Amino acid sequence: MKQREPAYIAQRLQDVPEGGVTVVHNPPSGREYVLLTHQFSAKTVGKGKIEAYHVFPGVDASYNLLLAQEITVHHAASPSVLELFYCRSGRVGWNMRGGTAVYLGAGDLAAHSAACCADSAMMFPLGYGEGISLSIDLPVLAANCPEILKESGVDLQKIQAAFCSEKPVVVPACSEINGVFAPLYSAPAFRRRAYLQLKIQELLLYLSNVQPEKHTLTQYGSQQTERIKEIHRQMIEHLDQRFTIEELSRQHLMNTSTLKEVFKAVYGLPIATYMKEYRMEQAMRLLRETDLPISAIADQVGYETQGKFSKAFKDVTQMRPTEYRRTQIPNESG
Image (cartoon, rainbow, N blue to C red; front, side):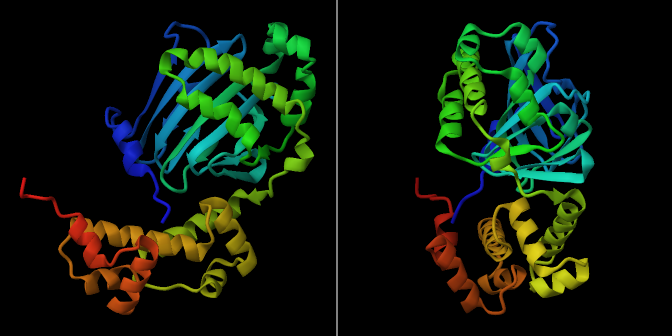
């Protein structure tokens, strides 16, 4: 079973008050950042931490760690500022201008202009997200272009034309993207800015050879993704019930193929796989935190019999429910 990470992220954010997003600037001077992190605000219950770095004139970066369902973002709609977001873990999405919805999984990279995401909602379907944001004011960078980029012939105007159009571009997870971003997490904190200076230049070299038309993400309407979130809410709030895809399609006025496709785009898994994992996670929580009998837990998470539940639980966790509960009991002998 693929374990999700909200507990680990909550531990890393334990010093951040609920309902807030803490922003730390490096350096901490009054420098004006391209990345307008002071305009982020939490819309739902949750919290987060953003560590921002000034990298070059016109180029800022931030490490983002968020435990929330949604964060609202307000900034100027500048068509010449290239926004890049690398998703390290969780799932991250936006309802962008023009009614377009974009969702990223681990390892994916999104590229778009600041005009696309101005006054947008940044969403976390799994309740958390971790990644790196880059904000590049291309005309300012061009006027202060590092020598390596000049010598390599990187055309920043061409990059602007390719990635700052009306629609976002998503480069799916690949070894080249991982090679750029992995060292940014393994580097010690005092060397982060130096690594960012190196890796942003490497990323611009890479993007100068990417053909955006080959990385066109299937576009979904924000109304479709909002309807999928309603379906998700309905299913997790009524785990003791079983809804067929046909029932959900009729109820929410969405054909079955679209429902399945958009659900996977938002939540990263086919609907049946996602719900099985979700049911097991809730069952594990009930086994850890309550003394409810196994039969009652089976009923709460939507299984007709204890036998069917125990088989599904073992399929996912490689343990019987009774064995799992026993492993969670503190050893009092010491």
